[in-house]
Image (cartoon, rainbow, N blue to C red):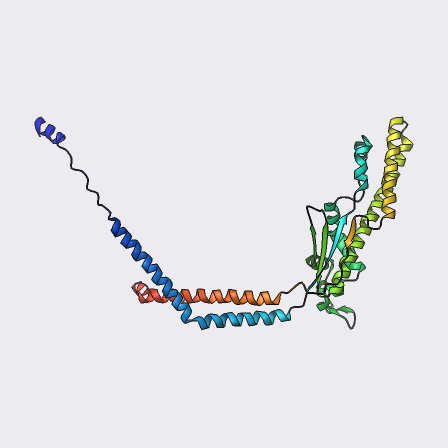
Length: 323
């Protein structure tokens, strides 16, 4: 190619690339066809469900009856509640007025508080040691495991001790029926027990509060006695006047704590509303269970019908035969 031809070839304008134009009317028509197809499918599905409405109703009815019958075999459970208010900690109120005694008491391992805080006291309530003692004191093992207890001979039905309920079984069983909630705004505590007997539920929760208060009170008394013994020993060994004055004040504080612990029956929690045997069951809610079962199984029946209709449509279109 000559230089002149090459130059003419380079200067020749290139033809523009042709881009297909999309017709808006065609797009609208395609969208409309897709919409119509979706509406046709929905209409087909609705007709399929309506055609087999007897199946849906039958499945829902049978499920409702079965669950209703099963719920009748479940025992009535009653819930007894007791409302509690934490007792004000007198030691904590006086703490700031003791000045440097707080640090001195901390170094000595002495708490200036009285009945402890809510979290600590409720942790004691849910502890294994406390609940084991409560279950043993109230002789609850045969009641908690009544199906495994022979009332006639007052023995376990299982002769092998390894197969008999133990302390761990009792702890797990009791924590299942015990619940505690704390209102963050008012700081009030609600303690509840759910059981098959309304009388036992209310009696247990009231006794539980009494025994918890007594347990915490006795623990505070023992702690105060130990603290006083330690403080008196330190007082006998110390000749520094300022230290002796501080020890005297700590001793007075511990004596006040011991006096409160010995005189206050409701040591950690004050009962605002004692539990009474409830007159209405807490659960099972048989009507709600039966209706919910009917709704769920009715919905599942409709889903099954839609799946069957979908498969039938694919078979009619030859999708499965082509594979």
